[in-house]
Amino acid sequence: MKNQVQLITYVDRFGGKDLTQLRELLTGPLKGVFGGVHLLPFFYKIDGADAGFDPIDHTRVDDRLGDWSHVRQLAQEHDVMADVIVNHMSSESPQFLDYSKKGSTSEYDGLFLTMESVFPNGATEQDFLNVYRPRPGMPFTVTTLANGERRLLWTTFTSQQIDIDVHHPAGKAYLDSILQSLSDSGVTMVRLDAVGYAIKKAGKNCFMMPETFEFIGEFAARARELGLEVLVEIHSYYKRQIEIAKKVDWVYDFALPPLVLHALEFGRSGPLLNWLGQRPNNAVTVLDTHDGIGIIDIGADAADRAGNPGLVPPHELDELVERMHRNSQGQSRKATGAAASNLDLYQVNCTFFDALARNESAYLVARAIQFFVPGIPQVYYVGLLAGHNDMALLERTQVGRDINRHYYPRAEVLEAMETPVVSRLIELIRLRNAHPAFNGQFSSAAPAEHQLVMTWTAGEHFARLEVDLKAKTGVISCSDMLGERRFMLD
Image (cartoon, rainbow, N blue to C red; front, side):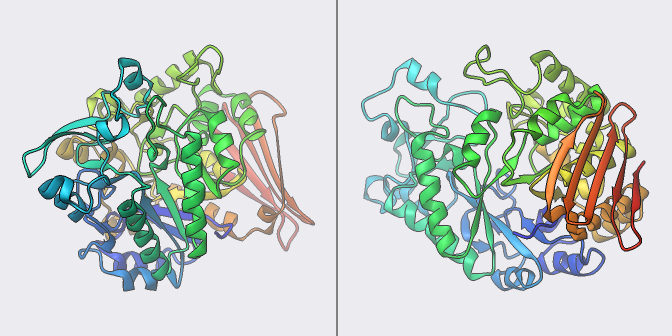
């Protein structure tokens, strides 16, 4: 993966309706801005129960977006990342429909996890309570199959997303076919979606167990055979994330977004600086994604709050959430938790720009911090355009995360690019992509509690970010052919 800023976007929500129009945008008005692009699920079909994360056929491009030749064409100009949805399959998939119709006589019998298949000897109340849940309720859906059988299917996320046995022969073949299709089409990196939940074991918490790491290692080895780098997506206690990073190619730095918000809201650098001193550097840095802003990533370990504190005190974390709600004029509250249908326990649904009360200076400072943190920066398409919460889409779908999944026609993209905050952000991205200092050594310091200094040096080249967190202002000083230039973040 290039040491340049990456874009993460839905194909049909950023400047057009298909892969051809997205490519035209990236090779036209946004030429040279991004070193790569993460295409959020573009498989058939993109408009199921979870915005493409429940594909019916993971090896087929949704016809409305194009086909594999269009992916291959985009990959000739940009590094392309794609998702491998490891944990589950759609209830509309051919495999599940066959199983639903034939039951035990189906070739896919055993592929789909049931309560009985995970707990063949039965389960106690404590067994169920041990299972780690990203959402409230039990991980099962009572389902009547087409053949009349009633089963308790394991469904980590929604009733339309049926968890699979990744070690079943059909499961192995299915996942391998996905990797093969992506590799054949020029994709060079895959993100393992929801992989932390992929292995289930009776009596355990069924999340990031030793067996999960074994599976990730095996799957990543196969991906590498096909020329694919692997990014693992895990929201969890920060110390667990550090351990995970030691065992995989790349992880997301999901602690960074709430810590940057905390630094700017509370006007002090301590918790962020503490994280910079221990975080893994094999990380993709983000401020926003297609999901919400993570909270669990800087909070205390849910399993043992007293013995494993978070990166910020509990009362400050609670206050940070309240400030996000206030900064967004209460809009994020309408999209988070019990107020919306996707009851994620660890996220606040809001655009990052609105979480900062649309303060343009603070937003540019936040992006500069992201770009200076070691790793590969990734910018979400809504964040690129300093997008506002889409309350109309939220009202229409009643899905909380849709508040940050706006559909931008091309004209709206071009109009947003002319605004001062977006044009300055694009200028900042180009600096991050091109300046040689970012291939050198990193250091950070806090001359005072409300200040943060981040520096990259490579030989005679340097780039230095100085931030006043209370004022929410900053300046970048960097070497150039004339000696030094300054980039004001206000």
